[in-house]
Amino acid sequence: MREPPASTGREGLGHTLEARLTIPEPVRELMDALWSAGHSAYVVGGSLRDDLLERPPADWDLATDARPDQIQAIFPDALYENRFGTVTVRRDGRAYEVTTFRTDVDYADFRRPTRVEFGESIEDDLARRDFTVNALAWGAEAVDGGGLAHAAFVDPHGGMADLRSRTLRAVGAPEARFREDALRMIRAVRLAATLDFRIDDETFAAIRGSSGLAAHLSGERVASELDKLMHAARPSIGLRLMGSSGLLAVVLPELASQRGVPQNKIEGEDLWDHTLRTVDAVPADRPVVRLAALLHDVGKPPTQADGHFYQHEVVGAEVAEDILRRLHTPRAVSDRVVHLVRQHMFRYEPEWTDTAIRRFIAKVRLPAIDDLLSLREADNVGSGLSRDAGDLPELRGRIGTETQAGLVLDRNALAVDGDDLMKELGLPPGPELGRLIDRLVERVISDPALNDRETLIDIARTETLTDESR
Ligand code: ATP
Ligand code: MG
Image 1 (cartoon, rainbow, N blue to C red):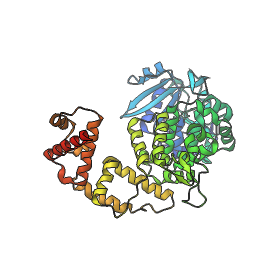
Image 2 (image 1 turned 180 degrees about the horizontal axis):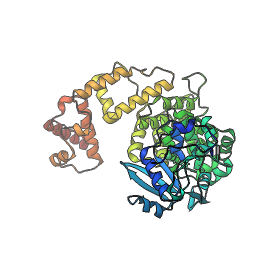
Image 3 (image 1 turned 120 degrees about the horizontal axis):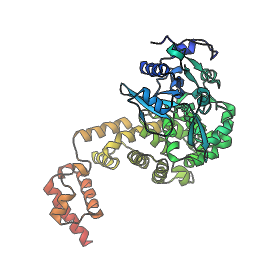
Image 4 (image 1 turned 45 degrees about the vertical axis):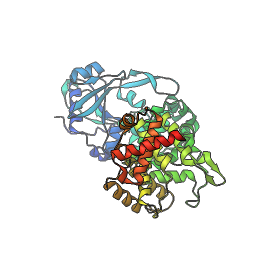
């Protein structure tokens, strides 16, 4: 075992922050192994930052002067499957990334570098990182003759001070760094939201001046940052910064145009304010509903006329689909979000009959009901109403009653399927068959007693006859 971390004064800080470090045992063992083999080893980047902030790090990253083949020689079970010097070592089911010091070269088109070069020192490695709080390291150089490693902080860019004042500041000249990689601007906004940090004035001014460069970014890279932003305790912090920096107008112009659109919901607030309140009101563990909240009124600016937004949910669903396609959102997620946007304008009345409740369930579809009701709760909050406004608890209760009674609500629960109908009635497959099944579902929703094979085939026969005679 090495001795516990000793402050060398290299970092010029007291012991308080160091005392906070909770480097896990496997990470210490990896560092020990690298040191013993005559290499330097440091904990770097987001993991060190998060640990100092007392946020459990998502993953632990190490930097070393050892080259990938040397890292693999030290850890024979390690995997090296990329061109960037990152070797993955698994310990107890968790992955640890050990990366050779790098300097990035050849930035092309304001995107990330096209190739990387190995750096000579931890200082080289820290200089290429985006923000000062992400450009800290804790570790030590190689220990000659296998003596004790005196681990210490390395902080060439003032990251500790920025961590204490919760400030995001670009490493080096902000404008030049955003020119190298425009994603850093979106990362700044995302990190401000997830860490609850402010962005330093000069860095923010540079984002405003360079926001147009974000147009060069791939949908995937933007989406991955937006996704993290949307998981923040209050996404509105980041979304507002997206708006005020000009980034929103570049990556999500459909949302930027909500600014200034009037809403008679909360005094003095516009549609963008309403969207942000709605997003914040959705629990963080419901990302699909949060995304739907972000996009639910995206159809309002294009449909605005005489103080109305006629059929904005229909237009909104189309716009939402475009946006999500651009962001390469997985189909399973975008289908759910688009559906919620399309359905979000329902209006429950206590006078609804049980049939009306079943029709509502059939239209919204059972798996989406809970999402839709939670979207409406957030929409209520975003409109300055109580979460339960519009008799939502009563609607929830009545939906529960209908579903528990096992009453048929969709095609899957119908006593006949397409095969039966084709066989019994000699119908060809196709959209006409689909429409027939939909009509049968409608009939069964109105009268659950009809859900019987023979009865439905009889109804289908009459329906097809009337169709032909039309
Ligand atoms: P998270 O907590 O979401 O993982 P992170 O800051 O760790 O945030 P990662 O994508 O895991 O983000 O990146 C790890 C580290 O790599 C960062 O802390 C930073 O030092 C560096 N880094 C990441 N992206 C960039 C970039 N575009 N430009 C410069 N450095 C970057
Ligand atoms: Mg990370």
